[in-house]
Every structure is written in structure tokens, then in C-alpha cells.
Length: 390
Image (cartoon, rainbow, N blue to C red):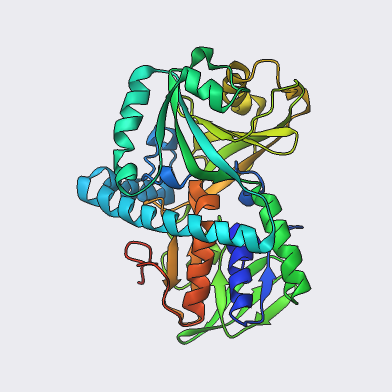
């Protein structure tokens, strides 16, 4: 259930295990939701617990308040350390699996990500904070503005104090990855039922019998919930608590028009919370973290902070009049880590809540899920990453 990164990658590993697979999604094509609009950065070295700014979340919505209260527990030392350990464990594993998947399936990834800072104090603090990642084996180097210019001539460094460079982090086109895998899966006999919305889960005792779709019921031996943002009615039928809430972000894909203005690698303006990645003559720009429910609406003002950052870092390089823009909903758990395993139903597995690091976690999450469905022990400890049963 789901034809985004989580669903398509899980299907890939299920097929490799010998399963016959059907993929269901309500959209017209694969990677049509969050997987089609993200920056595509595999920021494994930045697998810190994400701390949301909840001031934007003052909505009279019980679901959000419950999510927010759970999220606040991350600020305590013990909870933070547990989430950090789980997130780093998964990010490192997924980074390795994604490299193997890219080589096998034949899609490109670009090495190296720059994390940019405008203030010297912020750069120093980021370097100190990154010590925990360096201790865990991630390669990181601290650059001054001149070092940033040497690594990436397209960036105007006049406003920068420097950057952290993670040579082992990568970036790619998440939608291209999904569609490449989908093409290979179709050739292997996988059936894609697109434009077919799931409306209900039919359970009998401890097992799911079938899922009811707009085209009728679909029976199977096993089901994988790899959906992103789900409606409340469907979540209530899944047999366990699904603690996923949408965090809205904004994405713009802008043509590069100045010679020498194209980035060679991905970068994040950490001072502004705006990410950039090159996409074949275009620049993907993403940012924003808004708690505003399930709507996909957006306004020109939502993209102004993204464009402001880009205009300062890449002056005269982009044609904003031809930008393709959209909002996307990141499916986030309160701990900002995904959930795996089964709940009440023995044959319904979860691969949910990939959130703001979806591309970085997708390959490992998919392989873990396929292993669990097939009765194999996952390659990493799932402490802190399992679905919570009622």
C-alpha cells in the first residue's frame, strides 16, 4: 500500500525474496506525493532528532496536540539519546543499502553535501555538535568561506562564514529512483494499481483478509502499509496506533540560466533551513516546516524565504518565473524516526513515518520491512524503531 519511495523500494526487496507483489496507490503515477518533491539528500551524517518549532502548531486540533506533547519528550536527555542512537543506526544502514541499490538498479547518486552557515558562532556550534557523528564514524570537515568556494564555485560565499562538508553524504533525484525501480519491477511482473484509493481494511480475527479499494476488494497473504500521510478513518482501521502527522514543506524546481551557476553537489543553508540539489539543468529548492493540517494549498509568500536564500547564494543564476512549485506533506512521527513491524494484525506490516529524512532512510527501511515479511532477521537492531502495539 503506497507507491512512493517506501512502497516501491519495499516491493523491490520483496520481489528479490521471491514474493508476488501488487502495489496500490491513489495517485496517477509513482512518487506523486512527497517522494516526488523532496530535495533528495541522503544526509546520514545529520541524523539528529528533529526538534519542531511548535509555535506554528497552535491549532485547535487534538491530534496535533497529542503529537506535539509526545514530541516534546525528545528534549529530555535520555529520550534524545535513545532517538539519536536509533536514527543513526538506521541512517548508516540505509546509506549502505542505497549505494548497493543504486549500483544494482542503475540510477545516479552524487557524492558530498555542504552544510552552510552564515555566522561563525553557528558554524563553531555545528562543528561541536557534529562531534557525536564523527565519533560514530562519519567523515566531516570544517571549511571556511574560501574552502566552500573551492568545493563549490557556484556558491557566492560573501555572506557565509563557512560550512561542514560531509563527503560520504549523497544526493539524487528521488522521483527518478522511484520510477527507475518501478520500471524494473513492472518488467519482473509486479502489478501497479494506480489511481485506486484504499478506503478500508477488512480484518478477520488476528489477520487482514483484504483491503477494500475503489475498484473492489483485494485479497493477499500479506500486506505492507507504506503509505505516507493517511486519513484518520484509514489509520483507525490499521489495528494499532499510527503516530504520523503531516509537516508541510515547500518545493520549487527552478531552471539554471547562468553559465557556471549550476551546483555540482547538494547543499543546505542551515542558517535559513533551505536545501538545494542539482537536477539536470535545474535546482531543486526546499524548505519550510508548517503544522497546518492535511491541505496541500500554498501561496507565493510561502516560497519567498526559499528564493531569498537562493538569490543570495546563487545571484543571477536562476529563472524564478519558470519555477515549478508545490507543497508536500512529510509524514512525521513524534520521535522523527519511522516505525516497522506488526500491530494487532499478524499479516500487516508497517513501513511508515520516514519524515524529513525520507530519501536517506528509504532503502534501509524497505529492506528491513521485506526481511520482516519474509521471516528473516533484519540486519540491524530495531530497538526504538518498532510499531507500538495496543
